[in-house]
Image 1 (cartoon, one colour):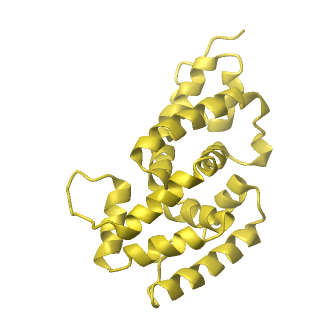
Image 2 (cartoon, rainbow, N blue to C red):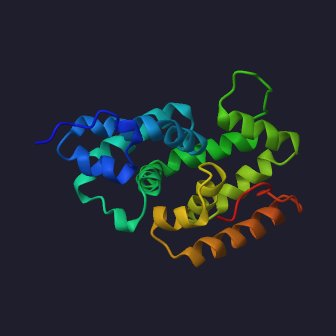
Length: 198
C-alpha cells in the first residue's frame, strides 16, 4: 500500500476517488470540496434542517459506492448531485410541504437569512413567490429536478445530463417546457432570468 500523497487538495476528483480505495481518509478532500454546495442544493429543495441529513448522507453513500464510480460516466460533481437528487426524492413530501409553506409565507429581509431565504425574498419582491411555489409543486418530478439542478445547483446542461443520466437534449426540452409553464403561471415573468444554458 503506497503512502497517501502530500498535497491531496491538488489531486483531481476522479484520482482522489481512485486513491481513496486504498486510503479512505482521502475521501475527506472531496467532502471538503463539495459539501457546501451539496448542502445548499438540498437546503434549497428541503430546508436547512433536512439538508444537514441529506448532504451528510450523500457523502456517506458516495463513500460506500466509491469502488463503483466510473470516471468515464462523468465527473464527480454530477455524480454527487445525482446521489443528492435521489435522496431528495425520498423526501418528496417534505419538498412539497416546503413549497406549500413558501406559497403562503410572507418573506422578511433579515440579513442572516440562508441562501434559499434570500432567493425567496427576491422572488417575493417581484410578487411571484406564491405562484412560483404553486407552479413548482405541480411540475412532474423529473422536470422539477432538472429545473432545480440548474437554478439551485448552477449545473450546466451537460452536468444535469450526467447527474440524472438523461440525454443532453432531454435536459433542454424539459427546461423549455418548464419555462413555458412557469412563465404562464407567473403572468409572463421569466422565472429563469440569469440561468446558463450550459
